[in-house]
Image (cartoon, rainbow, N blue to C red):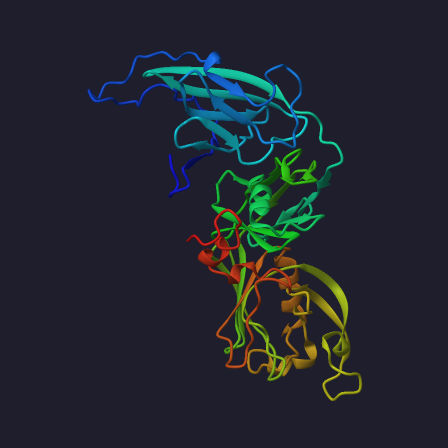
Length: 403
């Protein structure tokens, strides 16, 4: 392979499959080749590990052809199935790993060669030394183990910042997310140098198990920094529960698994305090909470100031948007938007909503008014779903700039 004019080919072996080391599968007579690869030990030299001693994990692995042979393919995989990627020169004379190998790790090296039209293969083993003096990058997955709504993003918090795009790609490649029994296409998004979010293209499947793992342990990230051990995470999703709030018509419709459960009269934010439109994810619930105007920047003593005990409060944003009981505005429910940004309803309806939803369920605000702000993707709870799939994928270090 070649990439542009670089003169090298990037070989990424992501699956431990048989290594093709002979001629092309179909030759000029369109028949598979029967040639068995010969022992190519004499045709290949490794830069380290030939003498059986542990390899320095701070140096990339190099493999060179000799005795007039040419390297055709290389696969380097550790005992956990993690590949060590590398580049093969256009003339097949040299292969070099693009990063140093993982520390304290055993690898199997399989090299395919060709000499005078005859295929060859060499298999070797090597073990790297433990890293000395390197710091370890810690990763903590979230949320906590439990059952969540289908809109709950997965988070990965790093204990050190990773800003370089190439380093981010190393980290991201090692963070794996799987959902069963239904697989869901998804991607990581770098919110900043220490925070990643993962979401599928659409919401998670209902009643799925989602497992998040890291294979970063020992992996070289940059000089002086390697991946540390990370605890895996497993969560489950419940029913698909989605509430849609029509800001203009002051109505909320709640659906479970596509079936409408109830349509409720509500009130949302008045002028100057408009409720954000867009998709929000339930952050938590409190049966009783004290709400004050000063918590959202309203000065004490202002005509807009308030200090109220509130029941059945379901939180949607970090800045203090809730769905909650608002008996003081009962005459406006289903008629006018009179709140300071929260979604108010009767005590009975608020209690029903509180007991119907769980953390990770989706509340979508539509038909916002001319002065209704947009829910941001990050920084005020989970607004991740407000980015299109194309925009979301651009936040990946592995897929940046692609659709």
